[in-house]
Length: 62
Image 1: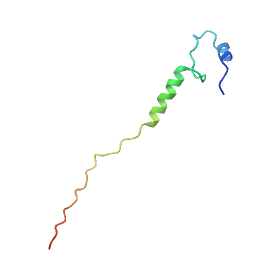
Image 2: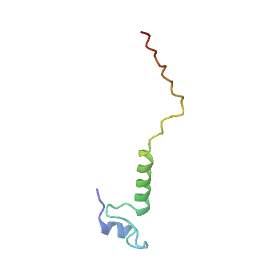
Image 3: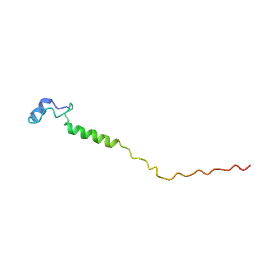
Image 4: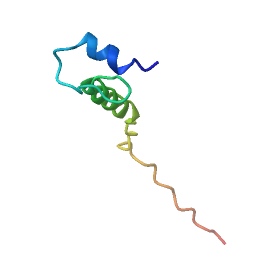
């Protein structure tokens, strides 16, 4: 639920307006939320340092 603008103004009358965004989140909170989402999306790099097995060439004996 989005809290009404008036209610928020009454709660924080001393604040410089608007410090909150459309959804009633403090701007700092929103930035943190976005940052946390970005953190979660990062995938671990696969370990490519393992030596690749060389394929043995098969000799055709005719």
